[in-house]
Image (cartoon, rainbow, N blue to C red; front, side, top):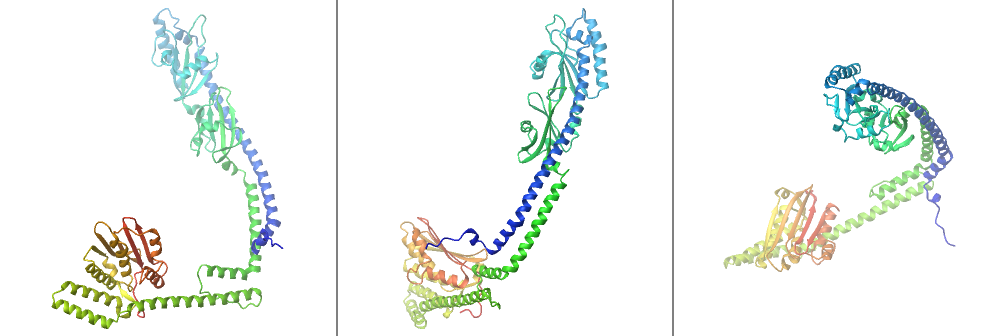
Length: 572
């Protein structure tokens, strides 16, 4: 019979099953009731907010309409003034009477109107025909016949006033055309904007936009102008009610003005409106939070009581999984959980014993390999033989032989290091120098050697015989295989970010990629890079060791990283 995989419920943790059952039985009904109450309260709040906006917009619209009507009456008193009609029509038999009306009637009348109403900035009559211009009170229509407002005023029906907000607020109207006249004259009255929009400017917590009959925004109050992401054009595209402008929820209402073709758009951010009547919503959310918190506390209490020991065992297993193998895991309980805990502790102890045996065995193996290498030559016999050869060479004035023997003797003296596995960085570098001197003599100085040593690293110690294999590899695979030009070998030692980095760099043809990958992990005969890499990692940790980089025709760089180490008294 085929065994089916367990369902989702069976794979869930016991604590999650408890949580799910309580959530289904208690929390979900609470959330459903809370969401329903919240939505009902929100709808009621929206209705009250829109109702309040409608009252406010009616008040502001009435104030603006009243101001527009007042200035419309002022324009009507000008356009239907017989004397002004005569002036713009130039129905005078002589210029004396025209001058008298301009100086004695037009100027005093306009000055009186501006004195009675300080919000009137300027009044100008634009006449067609041959009427002489007079100051800024009477000008030829040719000055403005290319203006959009002027053409729109001429196209307007009789007795209709046009309001504009273009480089300032102004209103225009046409004079009645006299019998037989072909000219149309226009009065232009500039006003201070605050005289019309003062009521709108006082709305510090509400946004107000006013658009003309063509849907072009002509005014936005200070709150609307500083509203994040606000554009009047986008606002004018919205419909009444609750809308979204960008990421912000708004309440929007509009109302047309009776005295002009303008429309007022009034909006309030929903978060500001919600603060006025949010007690019901706050109470609903508060009850939901309290109920959920109580249930979570109950669930947590039951979970901890029922599975406390399982959770404790799970925590210890996680610590072991993260690499902490030194835990003391045991239990005095006699039930199944106690037996499971004790068996896990026994297994952990056995794992630690095996790791210790493997670790010690690896160290002993590496030390044995090194000892075997170090004692391949009898030091006493070797030193005597080398001293004899040196004495013979000096007697025959063979100084190159003497130099070679001396370098070789110094190399083996530092390499053997009196049987100790720890050597000073200074002696390890001297060992490499001696080795290179011998190799250069053997190869007739066919390549150059450059040392770049940071004096700060000389006071530390490290493992014996870790640089010579790096240099040997660089000579064998680098400078000896260089087909053109002179080979150069650079040996450097420097302190870098809390570590000592030894670098051996050659300018040879480079190493193939597969050889680079295998160089530090494969034994290539003799005491190679793999041996050095493993000894360093065993002694100092996995974060230290060898890294190799090689580029074709550029050469190879081998870096060996070790810690700034001071030997203990029992290091050998």
